[in-house]
Image 1: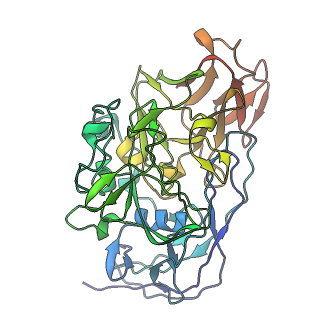
Image 2: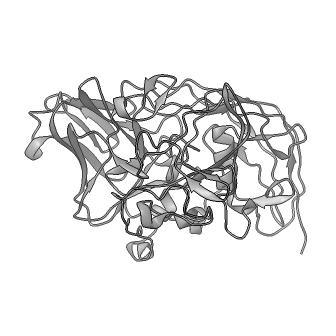
Image 3: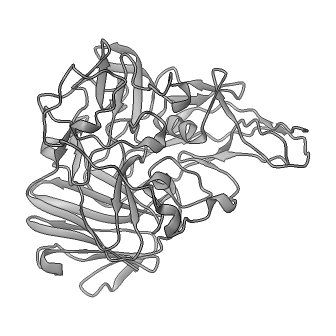
Length: 443
């Protein structure tokens, strides 16, 4: 078999973008003017990424580029960043503002084929779509549902479980599709000082030993069932603003990192307001929360099945993770109907509107006496449009306890008493101080 190699050489530095005011910050990649030597031969193209001589997946590459733990070296090779420079925050919802990311070519080593040039931005690389990227049918979804959570209200046996044991019997939900032993993300600090952790590396599934990714000194993050959220993260965070989350492997055992907040792995959000999702469609909707604090991958799943009501966690800003003293909220990525959580809740590509390329975001958080609920476009990452409608309603399906109205329908975000004010790009926000609020998903 003949081979073609495309080498696009660059020096790429990660810089800090202006944050979504709902969400974590996006790292931009500085634009360069690289050149490429291209050899064309017949056949399919396979893009391979290597780190320290080991092949790693594109999703791991993109997650590492996103959170600053990987970078492109001067010779075009992938390497661990000397220090993470991406500060992360998810402030409580408010009007959205974000700088447009720049893009650049990256090094790829494809095998056998018509050559392709890969392009990446702060969000991800672009690859040509194929039949394998088509939206899944309802039949393909079977077998992808989430496992049940066990003993979510029980205290965690601190220091008793081996680090090789995923704590599914203590409230955590395993996300096996990530290939990391059920964990949503694993961080391994290279150094620690008075100012915080530095040289924080995101552990990739390909570098795990015998499937055991949560190794000595690592912070191992996890998902919780619908209506719950991770309760554990260390007081010491990244030296330059990076977030770190999860329990830690210490002397071969799993240890709590925030026992003063909770001795359980999972906790509920605010009790002042109840927030749900009601799915009125005939297909599921995968809703993926950012793993924050942590790697910030879109890896925390909520599987809204047809005809069901799901609790949606609304973090209480006064009793949850603070970034540099500021309260944070939750950001959820809403994927097209019929996409399984296995396909949706992980780092993706622009070839399909899933994962971090999902068309739409929900912002949810409680602060200053009210829950703030937002629906907005996943900009600047994508201009794709969601293929169903979302409306926020209050008590008994009405609007009396809401500050206004907010709805996404037919590619537009609408507000106003009669939804007369609409925009294709600007989202909408409502607040609610008591009672319930529900995101209605409908075709």
